[in-house]
Image 1 (cartoon, helix red, strand yellow):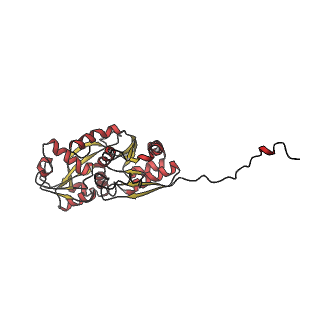
Image 2 (cartoon, one colour):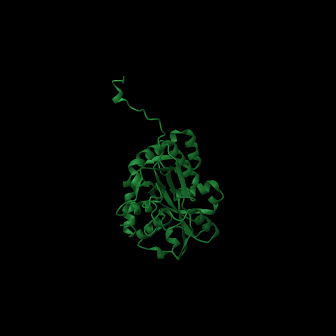
Image 3 (tube, helix red, strand yellow):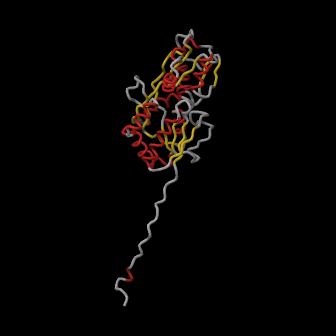
Length: 290
């Protein structure tokens, strides 16, 4: 005799492994001027908190894509990136923005910033330079790390615009390729001056104390909002909140707090898209974004 419940019998499926999501692809445009170890530490922490593998690559050709450059976000080649604000603002200005801001930014060890996610552009000359102000650099050789950098390039364009001048103020300009090479060029005498990311300069002085006697900061421009962290717009709904929370909580892990401090970072502070709007206005005034 069959069981009265035979028609209602169910088959219990055998357990299967839950498929893991593909690795996230991270990219930093800020090394070697900022040490790649910093971005490795951060992405390793995010991988642990998100329970998801993250790969990290370095693009040392420029500070982020703009205008005719290949957009790796629109091409679905990059999920997470550390870049300079002009690139972020350009990518956000597109008809279909390809990135979304992660509202958390690095807070570096700088007494001027009061634990804010900001930094400065330092106008650096040799210690024996006759220049006393930026105006004294007229006709001199100016170095810059790349044309997409806020601290190294656009800060000078903005300052010159305030003075009613343009970049023909300089006698010659040299694309050095990085803030570190700009510093080397000043020391060697290949260039007369450059504007350097304040956090890069601070680290260089810490690692090479003799340079404190060889270089002089002529002027400081800023503060500017810190270089943004962005995610691919297609993944914003999935990634922005968990990445933000993980970054803001990173210093709760004492081991990571010590490692960040060794790299000149106190932690992270909350940021917002509004904080980059002033820089966006500057770039629009220069005709660089719509």
